[in-house]
Every structure is written in structure tokens, then in C-alpha cells.
Length: 73
Image (cartoon, rainbow, N blue to C red; front, side):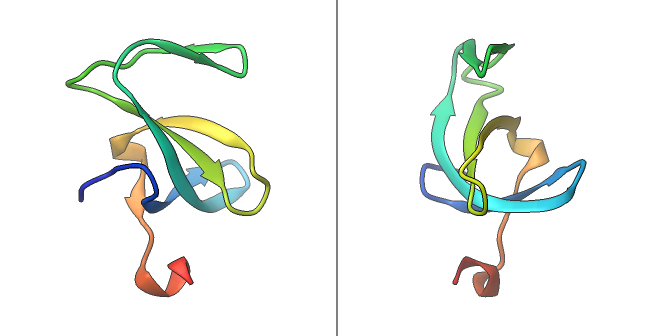
């Protein structure tokens, strides 16, 4: 699954499954909402934005799955 900016994805949260889009791929360490995230070219992190709330979070590729075609509509 090629993850890139604009890809519709879903991920798990304590409240359940959340849907949104990738807004940025990070390949070096960065801060988001006061938290430091570790990233590299071999293990990038993806900044995702919730479709429901607009909140942003950072996840590794292993935590994201591409949303199905019906969920993208």
C-alpha cells in the first residue's frame, strides 16, 4: 500500500476506528502538539487529519490502513 499525502486511511483510537487523510510524511524527528516523534527514511511517520474532528496525529505506517473505496466517498 503506497502511503502518501492525500491517501484516505483509517486508524484505531481509544474511541474506536477513525478515518481521515494523510497530510504529511515525516522522515526526521519532529514535534506535534508538544510531543516529540521519531521518524527516519526507513521508518517514516505520517501526520494524519481526522475527517470528523480535523484533529491531527502522527502514526507509523503499521498503524494505518488504506480506507476502502466506499469509505472514501
